[in-house]
Image (cartoon, rainbow, N blue to C red):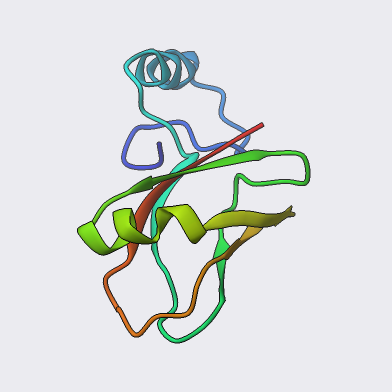
Length: 105
């Protein structure tokens, strides 16, 4: 939820209207806990940098492309750490196995 006039966590914000705007955006479904990733071609794992992930977070993948949908049965989150998670998957030459992700917790 970063951007002009929007509360950014970690800043020493004193304007209460920015906190209110952040809460409104959360209520409308906006979140910093989302992103997208394309699986590394010809590899069996892909490491993703995600600033809101932490050990104990739950990461959910949603297929974005047809090749991602085909790879879903052999694709899983194998580890979650501080600001990162690893996806383990079958090796394929496809360069368009793209997913959306949500990292919660």
